[in-house]
Image (cartoon, rainbow, N blue to C red; front, side):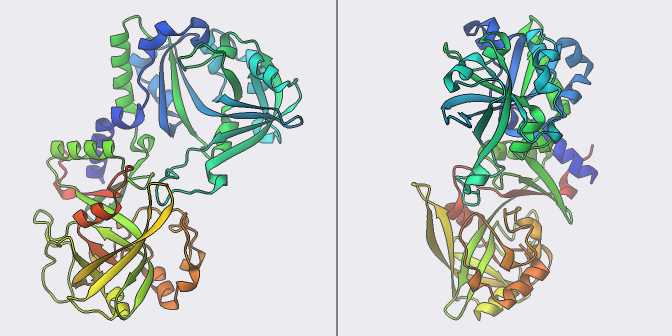
Length: 475
């Protein structure tokens, strides 16, 4: 376990600028923005993924950070629309902001400035409080006490454009009804914006806890706003960078490590590891002098032979017979699991029996892909059976498969509800028996090269990277 901690720390340090800090410091752009719009904000970090709300507290516990920055404020910053519940007047391009009592201090104001908003017991409010600026109020012709509908795009863990990302409107769009309790002038707080434009922003402010709940992101934020940075911007940024490196965790990057035997399995909550993070992982591997095994696991609609079909199975692409890892599988023939060619496939014993196949027989996979129009298309690929794998060890390791939404938590296959269409009538009693014993363990294995050629996307080509912990030095 100690070696896994070393690995996690190394990955965290390597992916700092590549994964969390998607938006650079806005310090260099402050000359183009009014003081009124930014208040005392010197640095702002906006992420394309949510991270822990506790991060600002951990940063402030660092003496160097605490003396350099007067305020480190968490927030959720989204784009959305606002609609008057009665008149249906609608405003688009609305800045939807979840804030807490620290936010007014960025403008030199006490929390009481937004008293009705920040003092509300949001857990008890059927219609939570909302504050907007004058420009938005005028556009909606709203008054204090009116009900306002706020809509926004939810940022799910898995991108909806990816095969296994949810396309359900309830998962993609969030809506909440709030009660207008205060209107701010179009200055100071009311004019807050990090965007470079001259027009007055349309601003909505909600309690941070309310927006966290509405986005299904309790305990998480997507922005840090820093005030009181040193006039020496290079020093301030250096202090902040060092503080982040000490405070950030794998969770903040959407990464996690699972332990499987002697392996540490590095995964992304986005299901596929993004290409920049993959590059950072390889950099860490070189630093630690270890050889990670890249893994790409995909959901096949069927595995077919001339004599049978097995529905809805995971197929794993990785290089077997790696010299540095030894034989990754035990074949029922007793032979070593040699490297697969691009047109070769291994089946586990259960699947080979169901398909009534022998070595050398053709085996066809059918699977979905997302085409250029972002529509699902069915593809097929045919392989030659190279060998049959014993039902033990890595061959039945469930950590080869990432957590597939609607599948991972299912008690049985009949209750599967993945983001892609499936025909539950194809599931047989024997498939349920396999699920009960082996769950998401893959039924087939192809070379990593073949998997990448079939299933890589702009989101990445890795579902996990496996590190042999015995290779990780703790020194």
